[in-house]
Image (cartoon, rainbow, N blue to C red; front, side, top):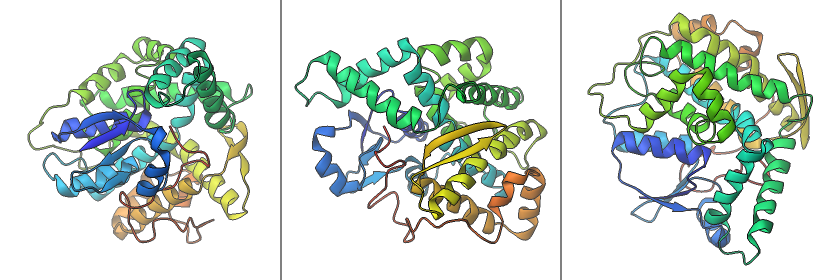
Length: 359
């Protein structure tokens, strides 16, 4: 199995942590952007990570990839047996994938030392085919990332404090859960843990500014990152049979931030708006790029909720007593992505999270 990505990539780190835990052999390769045309033919969108299987099939999109591999490698499962705990694992993973992306990109590309480090690495990994001066390639990367994944994701002088607050909330909420067990939902990594490895490992855990903040403010999370990267066979994973009180602050944060974002994005998509604004925890965000992919993310969460029994649905409602959570069970969906209706992922054609792709 060949994994094409980057050693500082959000979702590549998530996938690699999973492969290591499951004992799935793979080799790492930089994403060959010089062969972008070929990659688009194989997977539809050039993003990280991409996987080339031994049988010639290609996979993309980290979440469907993990779920596909779970069916092929059932030992050391990452999905809790309890339906409610499993649903919460999916919810936490989606929050990690789609909400914490914003502070992760902000810290990497706003702070000088962070962007110098990242751009130097990416020049070597993704731009060796361009015959340009190194300083120019670094500047091209910085300009692209800041434009598409910071400014067009609503990060401005007025929202920056709230963006950084979201990082500290994640650290605090994880610390509360890790006081009582080595992983978020039991004695072994779950889908929730692997989701949070995306931002916490290759961004917050390696970029100079957020790494120092993690070490000083949340050493338990810093330790958890290393534990996840070196996770060994836990025998028979023992996941929680119910969601504990220590998870409630994280669930509240997810509802107030991520579900608010998914709702606003879906309404903007329904109105065919390229950009939208939203108010999250009293902070106004403007000029955020509307994402068809995130409409699909919301559809997936709603589908998983609908698949629960009536009793389990009632339990989830009790766990999420916040107005923003109603989008998970309301009869009317604000928009429809018309994506992956044939359930082809992780194979076949993917779409970009944003119009111009995801690094």
